[in-house]
Amino acid sequence: MLAEGALADDWDVHRPYGANRPIGLSASINVGMLIANKKQAEFYSGNRIDPDIDADQTYLERMIHSERFGNQIWTDLVDGGYISPSAIQNYSQLKVVEPAKMHYKLTYQIGLGIRYDWESGWGGLLRFDWSRLTAVGAFNLSSTNGTGILQNDNQYVQCSVGGVENRINIDLGIAKRFFLSESFALELDLGFNLNNLKVKKNMMEIAGRTHDILDIYGSNGPMLNGATYEYINQGGVGFGGFAGLALCYIVPGENSVGTIDFGYNFYYEKLKLEGYSGYAPQHAIFLKFNLNTFSFFNK
Image 1 (tube, rainbow, N blue to C red):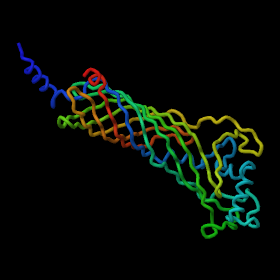
Image 2 (image 1 turned 180 degrees about the horizontal axis):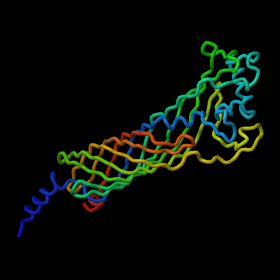
Image 3 (image 1 turned 135 degrees about the vertical axis):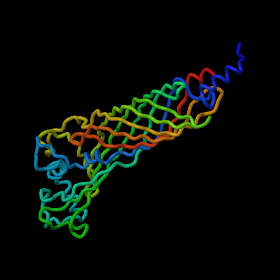
Image 4 (image 1 turned 90 degrees about the horizontal axis):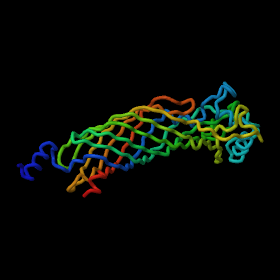
């Protein structure tokens, strides 16, 4: 008959670095930074074309040359000293001479997850992450006759444009921990990504005034006193894959309490934005707290 101590020693042989290794079901919460690819940010530049309305004009130009926005923009430019009303007599003579080059600001990412770990160091994971992203850029506004602009050597007025979106990532994958000591492990993750994107805002700012340029005007465009419609999200559901690397600190305790992980996730995702759907790399840096729930509540 084996003594209790001998049985414990045998257990430790099969579980290197002792019984502190997390096993079973864990819940996690993570906080981090999302570094989004600028490819999808170009959606918010207003440089897209809707051939159902006008195949020769971008949506931004259509807004500037519309009755709904044009008179106000022209008046603001005159009042702000940007243009001479004798040289540029109405909004139809304004012209976008250089489209905006867009990028996303560095933003936060927060999430929740569950995982199950086996004695071998293998595990399965499911996590949900949420971010709110802001896209920013600037375009140059000039005139069709090349005169009257007073800023930047009498050539153009620089105007900002941008947008806001909510993005959800759902990751399903496998994980492998390589135990380096009783306190540390290295983890590799690999899996499938499902994402959902919702466009919240799209704005341009000209001469200090902000204009909402979300497409809510239908096939007639933004006409003065024309009808507007409920905004239909121009984002949607996409998919892709991810790979991750993390350094895990194993929280000491009589039972496996859990881990604190610092790591990096690489995503190659197809994000859906009208006219700008496609695969692009995304990056996330995170700090994750895993609570090995069963062992915690059974202590």
